[in-house]
Image (cartoon, chains in turn green, red, purple):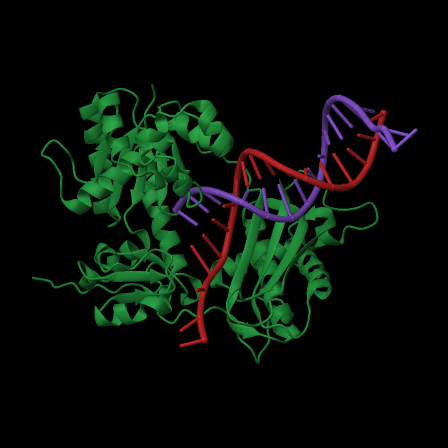
Length: 433
DNA sequence: TCTGGGGTCCTAGGACCC
DNA sequence: TCTGGGGTCCTAGGACCC
């Protein structure tokens, strides 16, 4: 049986902010989503205050102010940068590191070794990331991805409740023999299982399945009927039968969405148009950076889902003649779509651009028999990308800009670009003795 | 007043074909 | 009045993840 480790950064966004604000250690800290909308990362002190994940900020603002919570807007550039550093450190411990999300990675530990060797290995990983990068992580080790998730969850819980026995390393949980796996599964509420969401958890509870262990006792047929093959895979994984491989599958993404809520609702076509053109440019830039081309381009616009105004939401997509990642081609396409779906008079709250049918660059010829204009623009796109890489987001499509209305999201509490901007580097005072 | 921005996979049902 | 039994492909929507 193989082993898989899950390395999970603790309260990642909060940890990133604290890294450059050591004065905030042991103080309540939270990070908000884009547009300063919802709570997306909480320190332990904030969790104790009863502030929930995903809660709209305006609802907990008073509690935060009363308790002196330090509140930050999301600084994604900073988090991405620190994430890269963490992942780079992990690659020093294994040939197989699958970056699962910005704050998590599945890692295949060295194959030889006893349980205590694995404990030692996991503790070393944890210690190294903490000392080299300054981010604290939890490490869970078991036989499948879903069990590794269970282990990590348990490690976090133990660290939180300070119930760490002498034989256990802090922030580390290794589950290899069936007895300790069963004990862990019994401690895991059904809703905490990776793959069981807010729809299925209540359904399972009603049927008497309260813990992960309960679920492993149900028959395949029972699970298949109520939870389809996805649920069945989860159950097999909990029983130690691996259904999800670990690896750096360098597979191309299937779709790419770039969207943002407006800082305030907008009514005029020019502003929505500017936003859509902006998203199209961003999509093109990401595609080029990933060496990908697309053929299906879509635009989405919608009013807010809240409030008493009339609702309107629309999404439409077009097939381009050829796969491309050319900014101007994508821009032209989204403008045509927007003209079709835009209806005047609505208070729009969000716009975005989605592309599908993505292929690696070079998979299809990029010019037609009749013209090669797009090929001719490749050097221009390359130049733009180079300038952007060197100087930041300085080149725009003219119609992105709409002087009278800045729709970009609010980021009123953004921290500095400590590691990502020359102008905002952290400063260090050194005392020479 | 104020409610994120990404992704993946599966399924049911319809259109269409023979 | 009576009106088969397959296939395949596509899509929208649902469920999950971070």
